[in-house]
Length: 86
Ligand SMILES: [Zn+2]
Image 1: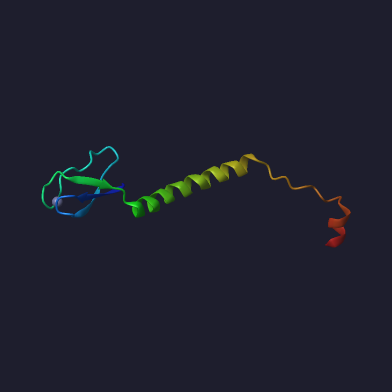
Image 2: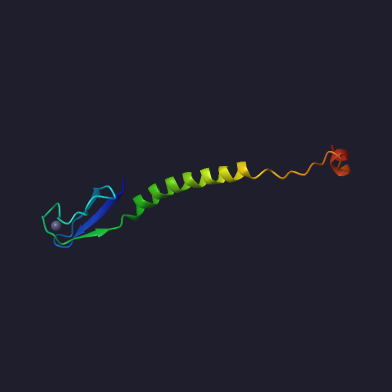
């Protein structure tokens, strides 16, 4: 679940809330109950979590591509340079 950071413009307090995407944003300060609260984007937690599932999806996509595309290794059993070298 994403962590949202909020800053109160009344008492300058910054606090974090773990919320679902569907949850309504916090608009009341936990410290002074002011409604002068603005939402901050918590970059650090977003990068970590976002990177995780992005990398996983990328790996699956890469494996899928590799399995469908046949490895084009040239058949060099009759190639003179390959047989004479070994
Ligand atoms: Zn406050």
